[in-house]
Structures are given as C-alpha cells and as structure tokens.
Length: 81
Image (cartoon, rainbow, N blue to C red):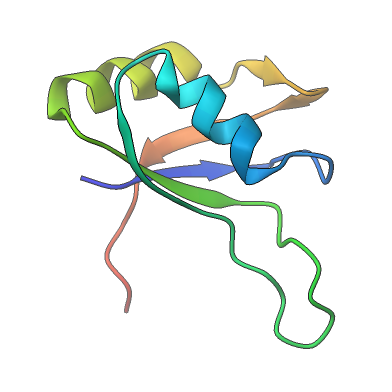
C-alpha cells in the first residue's frame, strides 16, 4: 500500500517525511512530485512502509495532524487513472 500525504508545507523535504514516517517502521519508498514547468514542490508526497500494519497505524495517527504548520491529509493512495 502507498500512503498519500497532502497539504504539505512548502518547507517540507523528503528527509523530513522519512523521519516522520520512520517512527512507524522502515520507509521503503518516499517521493515528492515536482511541477514539470517550475520544478517546485506540488504540496503532496507518497510514502511506502515495509509493513502494512505500520502503514495503517501511520494513517490513523497522522490524519489531520498539524505538522510543520499545516494540517496534513494522510490516506491510502488511490491508483493512477
């Protein structure tokens, strides 16, 4: 399962997300998509944890939590359309 994290602070970096989700288990993948034209962060990211139970715990614990000054959205990522 992949976790979607939305409403991220523009100051958030990949390492910050790895540290935050690393408290729940081993982060196997972390990506922060960039805008193709400007190269700036788009305000969301995707994280995969090695253990599905850890992913569920992270989603439940971090949904609507204030992190780096913003109330982040954390949920199971939907497949690309």
